[in-house]
Image (cartoon, rainbow, N blue to C red):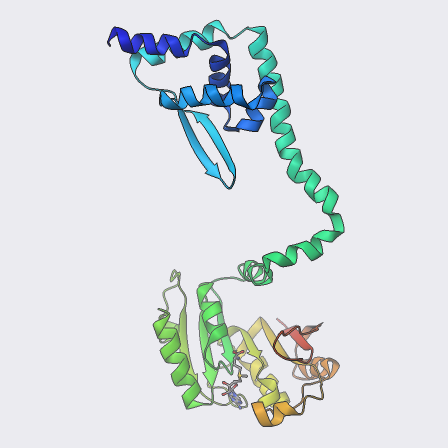
Length: 329
Ligand SMILES: C[S@@+](CC[C@H](N)C(=O)[O-])C[C@H]1O[C@@H](n2cnc3c(N)ncnc32)[C@H](O)[C@@H]1O
């Protein structure tokens, strides 16, 4: 090591404020304001020392929005290591350093309580505020991750396979049924483009992480699925297209194994006549209690109905319901 390098180290450590800053930044990553609070010094003074330390290559900084956080990047060369070990050892019992430690704890506590006091202050208004995040989809997806990934699920009236894809993304095996050849073709091309493995679900590897989707052509009233072949069956916005919704529910109950689940999503009975012409629907929704009765009639139990008021920015849409039930064990 040259005399010049040694002098540089000793010069850096010759200033008590710089040493205090280094001791603090060795323990915690801090913003300028936080250092000012701990040291009880003005910004100009703290910034000047930070500038010198940064120029000597002793600091690592991280920008987060308008804040810059600093941390001491202790050099690993022998002389620096020795000088820094000596500094730490000699100042271990120093009163000013002890005071800085206590002030640091207060600053860190204030940092933690800022987030806490934000929520304390916001309280019930959070419901309105959180809407800026538009994170309901994220919430639904998070909850979906609770469903067992090893399940095989039937998606009745799959359309372009939107739900089949969601389920396969969770690692499930999906039998996606539709009676429209064009819909199935659209699903095949879309799901293929999205990289899903299409093919026989029976051949799926149990450890297949990305799931697997099998497209089958067939009628909801005579599903091309064996008795108890699946763990769950789902029909999303399909019931109102079926001449015999009760028959379809009976079929769904048949293909699910004992203990398996059935979920049906559809519109609550409504007056939106335009849906007949524009969407080709056969039913203007259903009274949820009637669907609950049908689910019991086909031998299912633990029937639950949740009604949701639709919020569509594009058009007034009827309320929807989610009906679920279990096949007795
Ligand atoms: C409104 S789309 C819903 C598609 C999908 N479930 C979704 O939520 O994106 C209705 C689908 O049900 C299918 N479908 C209608 N009647 C059917 C029946 N009797 N048997 C099987 N599929 C049928 C249609 O071909 C169409 O793909």
